[in-house]
Length: 435
RNA sequence: GGCCUCGUGGCGGAGUGGCUACGCAGCGGAUUGCAAAUCCGUGUACUCCAGUUCGAUUCUGGACGAGGCCUCCA
Image 1: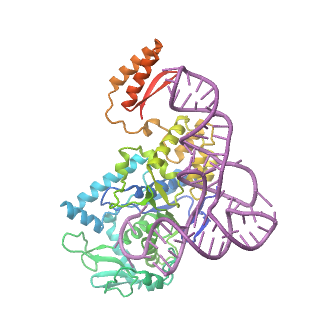
Image 2 (image 1 turned 180 degrees about the vertical axis):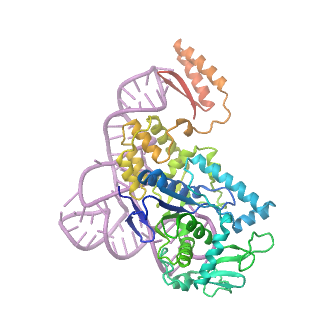
């Protein structure tokens, strides 16, 4: 079995060779818990869940470690707490709960470890100390900054050199920086801002630091796969690499870097000002989680995706037809494994799904990608339905049908149709469902 | 301005140097009291211009177009 992934670090499709096949290790950047996760946030969750499942299938369930963090210290969190007059802990706890509820509805596996940034401040402080000691960081004006020029090959992942970064900088450079590209490892906290005591005074970590500290703790100094959204490639992932490699003295942080593409909504960039900002929570009111997931996986993870209502409807139709064909899961056909093994080609896998005729294999293939095959789970939200009334109407319609009173029969069908109820006359009698 | 993706039929979306993608929708048929579901059948494609080649949607160059990143947005 050969797995291939497009590696952002080498900019080529490379064969995947785990450092240790007994323990394949992957890390994905998780959410900053300041508000409901939006549908764009759901993309890495969904596609890298498929990756996790594939790795478990190939290397064995107990031979894959997946770490996905929760960022619970961030200025956006502080701002929300301030705005609503509630504590920071309340914001992070409530949002973390919402996040877990949302992704549970999507049917993704829990990661092996889900570390929180605030529980790893000590590891972060140790890492900053190591960086200062090794000459890769310096203290200035209460801040600790990473000394970018001290790392000759900084910029490998995003393929940019220092001159370009300086020329492209749109933000005014803080006066305490020795070099415009230097970034913050530790910053001072005042007032209501969260903070911890450190050798550099009371303060809090910079945004990039936590992923470096937590990945090292749970996956080691060098591990197999690091994944996240394309927008994180620079500066977040670039800086993670700098921190991790320079503090550990290693040549690589992670062998393979995977980046998922961006998402648009009805052809436009999703933004609060355009009023097309879709949260997972909001979508779940109308659409089953597995439909959201299926819709996501119909596009290859590196491609941009245009998230549309039409696409969701189509996804629901396709999924319903597939689920109707499912039986007890047996073995996953090789065509499905081959497609997923080729850089997580989920659209190809879905196309292959349509070629499978064995009901048990269809179910097994769907299961592998994280679909339940449970028809009840892909029924759209029913709202307020008066079942007794519906059943009474169906009964009188069936009486009319028995009497061959087709006019009355159709009249009742129309009446139910107006209520949003669709009838199907099958061999086992009449069944109904919400349209 | 710099860097990076991408441009396939009505829509979604893989892939390939020459041979049907696939799905949704549409159309025709079977079935059905009528429907729904199901089954069978079916059409149109590879942004443009040059080059390489016996042959390019697929490789190279250019043009045009879309999107992303360029210090905390997945």
